[in-house]
Length: 370
Length: 88
Image (cartoon, rainbow over all chains, first blue to last red; front, side, top):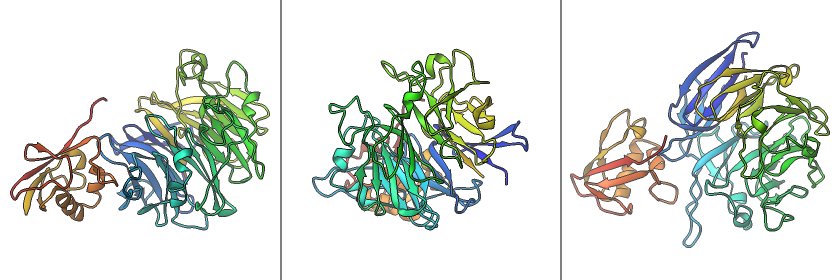
């Protein structure tokens, strides 16, 4: 089956499909022109199914579902929404559905969604109807865990499932931290020890950290990685203390960025795309020279991959959902999309880069589908 | 009570392209519920789960802007749904 890339943008959804040798790529779309598309995710349990998190500038957020590999889409009959607030309670409303994660392989039809403001939602019917996960959304500590946020809202993202146990979940909250549940989402505990949070009044606080992207390796689910506002980290469970593997990055480059991308089979191999986090946080490629960095040893060392990328004056920003790999264990392809509307493909694990689409709207997500 | 509802272009995917549809109800809330019954999903795009009109939506009954969904809609009135968005 041919693979494809799904591109979620501020103005709609696009697809890129390669020819047999992955030299030429055909762009299709837009679908949902003018819609703000945050995430498009395939269901590995049922590959004909894709879900799309979307809204428009005017209208409330929703989820679309395709049962034919993205040819046609139908809106959820009950999109993610907080429960009606009681008198005197904070009246939360979902502003955007930001993140989608398919449920456990044993739970066909189950999906999770993360929203802004930070909320966790579950569907048990393939994305048709969504219910709040009360164990998180109404947790007595939630107002403190998600207290800071930004004027753009807190984001709940990086919903990770332990493939050995559908009741074991991880989530990330921007300016909130990483949280773990071992009871199917009924209760949650912070998991941020060892992570820097130098912007907080108390840098040793148990929560309030700012994970940008948390990744759980499906083949080695005790291995977690994290690209944080304050560095790149690894955590090997049952340990609870994150190790800052970004210390091994070149000092001139630093270890700030948004995406963290795993190899499909090798838990020691991963990619990051460093961005400038100095002074006023430009969040562009360092010195206008974009580069991807790859580790092959769990973050003990990193290798710069910039062959084919612009050598100078390329001030790219790549958001947390806008980088992925395909699923080839050998000669894996790596892909990223920029806020300037370019998609780049890194053949052979990122050894050589080529721009495969440009002039697209601001890219929010790049995901792979088979 | 019957009324007329003017549907803006971002919501016409729900009304099969119709820019004007018939409505029913004595209050704005009832008119929106009636729309939802016939055009499933349309209400949540305009009104959030706390029954607040979304920030980029304006509702008018005749020429009066709606501040609360409990406001009355007279027989024969026109309810306007207006999308308000700036920037690119």
